[in-house]
Length: 120
Image (cartoon, rainbow, N blue to C red; front, top):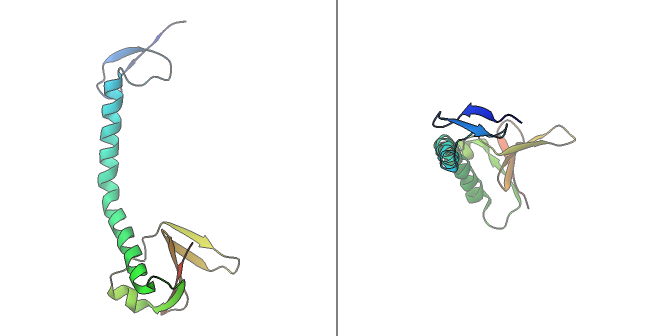
């Protein structure tokens, strides 16, 4: 079997080894992944702040014990709720679209009303 000769993905030095090997050493492999996580963290930090703020707004409106509540859309807008940021969606059998923000969901009930639901 002929060993493969490639360039390290991080430091570009030549190395040999298995066909699926992409780094010349464990040091380069670790440094590559540290840099990747750092770059990812910088990008998602702002989005994560917005998602946590949206959840906090929904929690504040719902209180500790309520499981669902209708609120005026303006009440959410005044608290600077960002409608375009959510963690997932679900469409029920009636075609209503629920937007999830972690353990809460919200649905446009009418033009001016939003239904907020605490998910368990």
